[in-house]
Length: 228
Image (cartoon, helix red, strand yellow):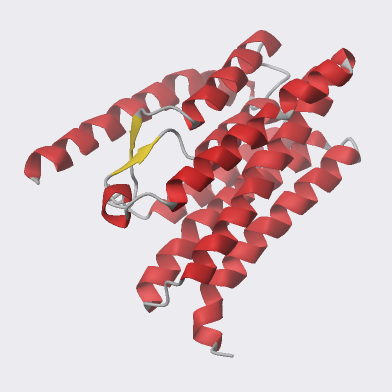
């Protein structure tokens, strides 16, 4: 076995294990820990592909393994978290509604796997399941300060955005400085502010930062398209 080829797969398996741990924490009523492990899975998912390209060890095995990990960490785990925190009182109806998330996510992943590689370098068709699962986990992490109605609307919107034909800018060609470092710092800030019980101000900032970030990403995407 070539260890060099397995290095990216180790990060992918770490992503999958985060999904498993998230489901376990959800079943144990530790919802914040469950949401945090989904966010850690996002970090690992953003690294494995970059490492594979850096080491020139991209393979069909890695692609398939990545899809299997994503459906667990960003599909099944967030849906469990959504059910136990928001929809549990609805009984089987809530269970059925939360189950839509991994169904739409699986369809999104299957469609992405047959998309031309050159096309995926510049944009995604529909919002990636990684982003959708991360957004849902973040909303649930701060659910005490975010209206449940808002979270439900975003949940339904994310389901349809995953299978939509809307083109989302791809981070593979949008160069952000020290991308993984930024994500790591963000997660660290969230953990610290959560522990210090002073994260209500941070929650309100999400309403400002996220739209500004999306506007910036759209601008970069349009700039890249114009230069092609």
